[in-house]
Length: 143
Image (cartoon, rainbow, N blue to C red):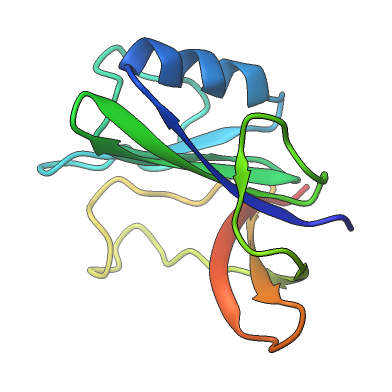
């Protein structure tokens, strides 16, 4: 795997939507966060999008965003190599895939209504290749 971590700033919610649509795949999922609510794992963006924070993830990459003023700061965690328009963070990354477990809907650790993805969910650790320090943990869709 040719792992890549990078950042990009976009100046509006329209630019964020355009960026997300460019990277969306058939297996992409979203998890959106507002101060008062979370979306749970969803396949399509809701009408009240954009959210101040969120992520879109698939088998190969995760895009995270956080509102910064009128724009958004975007982090890309990818196993598909360098992406144009993203500034690299670090130089050499290695990844390790792990299973992830979603608690039952009656579990009190999560807000009500969050259920597991069909096909499962996984985690991908992004580690500095020289120190093996884990810097990021990305969600992945498993089939």
